[in-house]
Each structure stands twice: as C-alpha cells, then as structure tokens.
Image 1: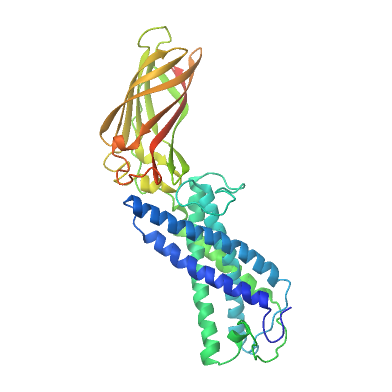
Image 2: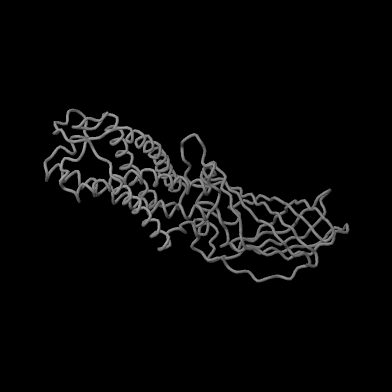
Length: 395
C-alpha cells in the first residue's frame, strides 16, 4: 500500500515506465508522419518507424490498464496543499485526463489500424485485426480523427502535468515530485487522498468536447482520398450489370492489402451460342473511386495511379470459349499504358441472367505504377484483380 508520505514502489514503476513509453511514442509518431516515402529505402524506413510507434502504443494500452487496476486498489497520499482548492482540483482533472488518454489514444489508434489493411504492421504476435472491428475505411477514418484529437489532448495534459511538477519542485520547493521518485521521499505526513467525482466528470467532459471538435472540424474523415473520383457516363449495353465488384490485392511488407473500385461501367455483348468469338466487353473504371486500406491516398499519387492525370482505366476484350469456361482476350490501359491481357472466367447462365467470376494478375511495373518501389519485399510486383458481377440481358 502507498504510505501517507509517498507512493508504493509499484505505483512509481508504473508511472515512470509509462512516462518513458509516452515520451518515446509521441516523437516517433511525429517523425513517422513527416518521413518521405518516394524510394524503397524511404518507404521501408517510414513503415519501420510507424511499426515501432504502433507496437509501443499497444504496449502503453496494456500498461495503462494494469496501472489503473493497480491504482484503484491503492490508497495514495493526499495533496501537500489541500487549502489550494482550485490548484488541487485542476491537478486532479489533469491526472484523470492522463489516465483516460493512456487508454483512449492507443485504443483509437489500434482500432484505426485494425479497420484498414496495409502499411506498418504491429509487431505483437496476436495479429493485425480486432474481433469487434470491421474492415472499413469509414471506421478507420473516424478513429484516425479521434486518435489525432485525443493525442493532442494527451500532449496538453502531459505538458500541464510536467509544468505542475516543476512548479512544486522549484517554486513551492515541496516534496510532491520526491514522493513519486524512488528511495526515501523525506516528505511530510499528510492525510490520505479523498476521492472526488468532480475531476473525473471534468476529464470525461474534456474528452467529449474533443470528440465533438473532431466531428465539427472534419477530422473524422482522415482516410478519405484527396482525389475526387471522376463520374462515369452511363453506357448502353446488351447485358446490363445489376451488381458486382472489381477488387484488387497487392502485397506490402509481406501482408496483403485489399481494396475495390466503387465506380465502374461495363458495356457487354454476349451470345451463348457456340462460336469462336461470343461477344465483347468494355469496362471503364474511375480510379479515384478506389479504396485501398490505409494507403488509399498514397495510391492516388503520381508515382502510383496518378489519378489526377489519368482518372480512368479501361479494359477491352473479346469473349471466347475456353473449354468448359471462357476467356476475355484483350487489353488493359492504366496511366496511358496498354498491356495485352487474357482473363479466364466462369459464367453461370440462368435464362437472361448471367453470373460471372474471374481473376487476373497484372504486373504493376508494366503500367509504370510504383516505379520507385523496386523491391517486392516492400511492395509486391503482382496485383491480383478479382471481378464478380451479375448481369441481366435486355434489362
């Protein structure tokens, strides 16, 4: 138990361990955000620093939970100047803001990470996902904004906490700081700390206000792409697509990053009667409609899809029989580069309804996508494209 003159050795250990972790994490996050990523080496360095930041953040989360569980079972010495009501109240509020932020900041960052795939894995061995968090760019954006805003609140409370400790040490010249240091505190005996709910309520209110500010000032869409998706014109088609998906998967640092295009059109003609050529297809894709995990914005950049200069990609092909299935024999144009492509696909016909599924692997460097990333260990060369759709004839 904590004594009336100082804190328990376990409490002190938790305090200084947390302080060291936080003082490492904050600059690591700032440095990682500012690091360039134009080359293989730069991208690897940026991901490495972010992985350290995230891994230490998860460590802080668990250390904070243990610290809070320990703290609620322990009595602690009361304030040395209980007659200073306002100062004591403010100190308690700051302490509770710190307690909450030590859980809220790493947890929101962890949820952001779990909600979207790609870039800078957490090095703890329990995987990259959380069972209650869906894979969703919208969820990731909300928690990225909360992580950023709560982080600013945590930094402010840390600075106030340090300022208070320095005031006690050099202005008041009392034993406040010595009580939290190791060894004998030589501090006066004081009454045990009395718990008040006011500081806790004020701390919770501060977080509620920070969350509202994040919403009001648009910080909850931090995973939105900075490139507006080009709207596509409707097409007249013999077979009209009712629903479907064009999804892509690429390996980054050994982990799959998957995404899909929200806006695309297909003009399809097809006659199921046996023939050497059974039809043709032209698909236009709005590049800016892509969501690709945590690297969506980067994928729109000049070195990758360059969505501002090349807002669409096109696939044109003739449909041919291929044994018991079919093959789309044609080409793909991305970033103004056209490459021949053959895509095998399966087709299920039910009257005037057709269900199609197909997969093709594209080599990104053939389209000048990610030319600065020449190492497959950082960014895989192969991009797997999975297509599925349901179309209705004459709809």
